[in-house]
Length: 168
Image (cartoon, rainbow, N blue to C red; front, side, top):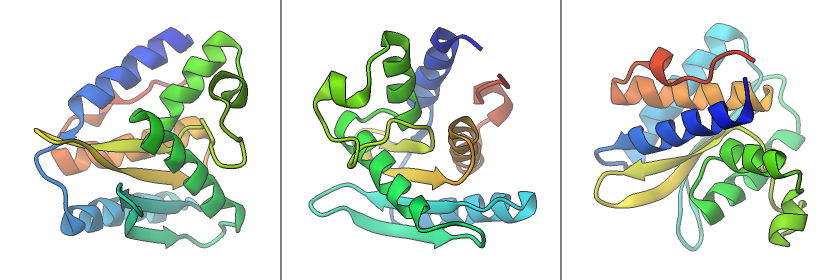
């Protein structure tokens, strides 16, 4: 799939996947949904849901069997991208890939703190804007991204098949 098609699909996801409200209970339901998908598919992933602010407030976290100490670090680095740019980490990474620039070269931000790789998606609330993020780490970046979108679609009653990124 061409990068331009993926970027257009992600822009659509970001525009349409809007929660009417989002609180700790919403985060819990979304996190459990992701965990259930992971268990059913035998995925070894870390799931992190947090509200932005100073400091960020963790709302849901789990590390599935088979994950490594690197996964939480990936979560933090992807989350930093969404917190800074209010775009999915995959969209930021694909846009950089399209330009041929590295994250550090484009934004002068350290790679040690930022990872423009798929798997972190902004939590947008109607009438409020971006309030946090949901992150998955452990699969390929495209699969991480799609899993998060699938779970959000399930929570919002949206048809995942019309919003997912198609297979490469």
